[in-house]
Image (cartoon, rainbow, N blue to C red; front, side, top):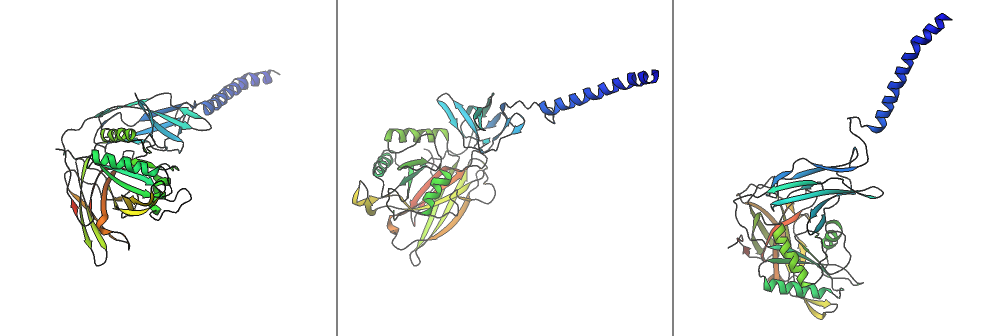
Length: 375
């Protein structure tokens, strides 16, 4: 009996210690992460840096976590830029930010998992100005989406023509036609639907206008004051860091145009070159415009192999001219005398998720255009 009591008094403390250790281990596995963090289900945002240069190249990369789960690249996560004028949502899955405009930028994050959640904190990024560099004239690419079956589309064309007359040389318009309203549009191209569904937000209504391949925060339809306001915002918020020049040579024997796109830049950056062929003065029916309506700026072809442009080999070095050459054979029936070449240079401000037009230039087919500079 004494032996049993002795064993009991010896074993009991050991058993109690083991139980306490197991409880502690279980508690840690449910409330703590493997690296010691707390899985509390709260959304938080952090950044790899909080100060960059306003060169459009240096970027901030954000990390967004729901508790211990990294949701930075989830399709239901998006960053929100907090402004005095209101919040601006970045595209889903975008976790990088660059800009050419100095200032203070405040970000928070949103994540959807059964319900919308917002980060409990914000990240402030200071963007410092960059001195020096060439002052390139900034010309915008205006992407108009239209159709012969669209009743409201002539109004947008009239508005764009008025803006071009009032601000000559500021806006290069490329008009993308599509089937609409139960009518087949003979000027439609496959590129139109690809832009609409894959790049510009899968919109359905017409007419629509976009600047510089950017989705924007407002649906521009035909209101002149709104279109002018957004034009000025584009110029202010996204200044040009590069210049664009064009040489085009037309061979009448085989109806082939050879285009040499030229680029110079204030900063060493990755650029993509996007080339359109457009035609003016096409007479064809237009709903709410009559049987002999004049269609201008009609995109006949995207010469580049990608709708996001073709990438220059390697980085483009600051102050060094880079060139890209492309050829295209014109279709029968296209009026060479009424055609133009539009060349846009694209960059990314979100780490390569999207590409937008940094600057653009244009010329008559078979002619050339030099670099444009501010006076």
